[in-house]
Image 1 (cartoon, rainbow, N blue to C red):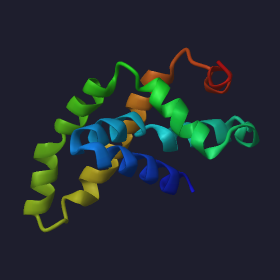
Image 2 (image 1 turned 45 degrees about the horizontal axis):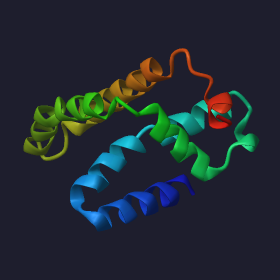
Image 3 (image 1 turned 180 degrees about the horizontal axis):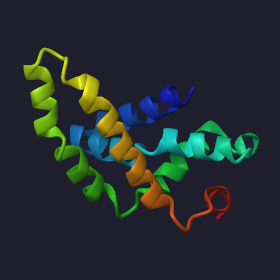
Length: 119
């Protein structure tokens, strides 16, 4: 369900132009991490699906350029993965996902996500 909500909002922003859609996709990029984090705390019943996207947007305020540069830093690795006919992605994909997860951990330090939703 999170995928559908996130995709629909990104699609609606992309109808304006491509660039706003890309920017919003960066804003919504932490949605799944927030969902898993709140679920691990046992507070998933207090938060709706759209709220996860809202929390991601608030968390990424002022950090979209950093995330863009982080994603851009993997461009060479992705090209290498395609040059090896996809075999390189066996090692590249876990490395990328672990890097994105560590980025989320640094973003969320000092934040109580559920209480910030009520602001």
